[in-house]
Length: 467
Image: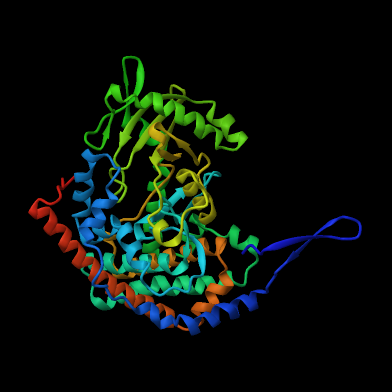
């Protein structure tokens, strides 16, 4: 936690910093004192106000400014299940979270912290780690907002898997308990040790509870390591008229019409992107030249935002695939305040670097045509997300614990671990409250999902399914 400082000068004119320093124990007590104002039990509350905006209107508004021909694909993906709907409605939940009790202990929040936004990826040293991997909505905000969205995602995901109510509750509270216990540990660690903390593949394999779990984790690690540009390059590209080109896979991967002059715009954006990289990484990027650019449909909530795949080549068999993704304002901004960064791509990049234990070597930002903001990262750099639909309750519960620990570590980097732990405490009071909230919000999400499906059936909105 940064402390406010003033500057004084001694008799010799040498600057001396005076800080309003407080010990970890003092900050823990401050967190504990906040329980009087916002009891931990109050986080169980969730009552939908009668004035709440129609969820379909909120969803339509979130589609404004997107590529309109892709909106039906977005809605079709959201219609797949209650959990898919939940993934696509970060703006709806942000509106709802703003009405819930909050301690207002702030951290760099993910903003869209659901269970599918965690996974494996490669560090710049080519080590495989598990971490949060989506930061489109990141912004400083109350720590409870992330943990509530994460917990609700586990409850809804478990319901989608047709688990019992008891299993849903156990899985959900496991994520919160792991978060609270991890924050207790981080509150006792040195600042640097918190920043050095990570959940790497060695730890993942070492902590496997049994032989079967270890075999599954080894298989997942193998698949993740294969998910790199060198491996996918032959599958997604081909030589056409003497040039290497990205293969169209309509409607999900396509080359825009020539009149849109996308390649020219990307060239301009890439030059700005280059300037956002540290000097030594500019040298690395300069070894490549831009060979092709195609548009790509990604995710669930992101469908319709402008997203390109840039193919860069150093030699004939030496590719680099970059994802150039549109960066709009965070869904948290209307409720948590505007970003300190005018460029939304920079907001995302800074938030990612604050929260992740290691970030992409080539992470940067740029401005494209019509002053649209983008951020840039490598595509498929050992990135791998787990499929929860095939998990058993015990497996999903273990996954929930890992995600809870990971979120706590991310929050501890930018927030005050001692104050957060002081507020949550040693008992399971906070865990049970968030668990109750998750169940109540899962009920609301199911109601909103049915309203959304009715809007599709009535023709109010159009959805293209199975794409």
